[in-house]
Figure (cartoon, rainbow, N blue to C red):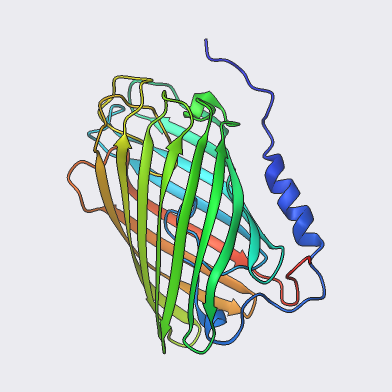
Amino acid sequence: MMSRRVFRIPSVLSLACTAVALHVGAPRAFAGALQDMISPVSVPTLNEDPRVDTEIRPMYMFTSIANDFATQGGRYQVVAVQARAALTDRIGFIATKDGYVWLDPKQAVPDHSGWANVAFGFKGSVWQDEDTASIASIGLRYEAPMGNQRVFMGYGDGLLNPFVSAAKGFDDVHLQAYAGPRIAISGQDSSFFDASLHVDYQLWKLYPLAEFNWVYVYDAGRRIPLSQEGFDLVDFGSSKAQEESVVTTALGMRYRVTDDIDLGVTGEFPLTSDSGIFGWRVTTDLIWRPMGWNALF
C-alpha cells in the first residue's frame, strides 16, 4: 500500500503568484536586444532562461512512453503553471515544477492521476550586457517530494539542482544554453546531469527554433531494479540505469502575440536508441510577462 501525503496543492506556486501580484510599477528586468529573445520551450522544468523577469507560464505536455520501456508504451500528460518573480533586476524567485499528471501505461501498472512534485529556488544574473546582447546566470532549485506516488512522484527526500544558464544574441539569431546536475538527497533516488542548447531565428513576431536536450544518469538509485530512468520529470531510482544517456531534439516555434505574451510549441523526439521512458513529446505553453511588473526591491 502506497503511503498518502497531506500535501496535494502546490503551495509554492501560490506563494510565487502572490509575489507576482506585488510587482507593480517598476521597469522590466531586461530591455532592448535581451527583450527580443525568447525562452526555451522543451524540458521546461529544467532548461531555465538566464534572464530575470516576472512571469506566469501555463503549459501542457503530452509524452508518449517508449514501447521498449517497462510499461510497453502508454502516455503521460502534465498540466502545470510555472511562476517567476524578479526580486531585483538581477535576482529572481522561480517555481518551475508543479501541476497535475495523468499516467496511462499499457502494461505493468494501472492508470493513475495525481499531483507532481514541486520545484522552486532562485536565480541571479552574474553578467548582463545589453550592448552585446549577452547574459549569464546561476541558480539553485530544490525539488520537494510533495507529489502523488501513484504517478511516481513523492518518493525520497528530493533533489538539489545548481545550474548555469547563458544566452547571446547575434542580430536576429539567438543562442541559449543550460547545464547542471540534479543531486539526489536520498541514496534511493538517481542523480542526473542535464544540458540543453537552444537556437532561434526572429522573423518579425515568429521565432522558429531548434533545441537539443541531454539527460545523463551519473549515480543510479537503489529503489527499484529497473534499467531505465524517467528523463526530466520522473526519478524512479532505477538501480540498473547507471550511465544511461538520453539525447532528444525539439523543433518548433514561438509567436510573440503582444509585447508581454508569447506562445510556444515543440515536437520532441529521441536521438539515442535507448531513450528510457521517453518516446516522443509535444510541449505547449503561454508566457505572460506583464509590462511594468518587475522588481520588488
